[in-house]
Length: 94
Length: 144
Image 1 (cartoon, helix red, strand yellow):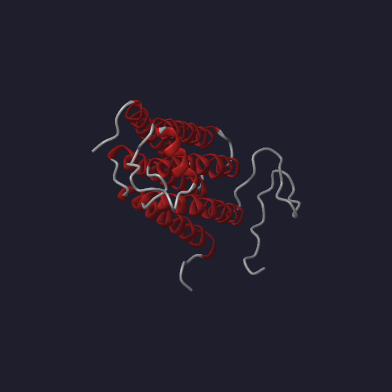
Image 2 (cartoon, each protein chain N blue to C red; image 1 turned 135 degrees about the vertical axis):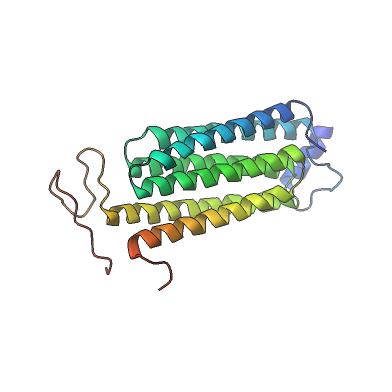
């Protein structure tokens, strides 16, 4: 079961735009001059992937993928905190 | 008449009648489409800021506000589409979580960048300490 009417077009266009935006954010991860630049790029990629999961949930009418987006947001936050602590303190677990 | 029923179920989400199918009336479809468009716009603004701005602090300023707002708007579109029942409520939890964690993550990254000695763009200095211009900034001690 999928969405119908113009909402299907809007959601599909939004999916394509979000995917392109994620690829563009990969530019900053690759050529970022410093380590925090790459971390910020990866955090942005995480946020856009969460948006992609929610858009996919709307497109396929399956609410399961909203849970997937929530878990991705949690993992992205934890990984950001872990990298920030690793860069400053030299270790994550003391 | 169908619109009236739909608006009623928005206003009382928990007590909404489950007869309203997923992705029901025309008003809800229009609101979902509008929220998806707004969310994609703000995601694009955030990534343009990430690519174009000159400094890691400016980049995280762009992404932590604009991208978070875009993702929250798309989450809200999901909540409206699922009528704030089941997965729709989960998407509201996702909005709350994004608004709590994105500023925290940006704060941690900016502090890490400061400890690493990443310079500001131009002749801006960190508030509190006065480094000489052009001279590499002294890394602050971690026990404070």
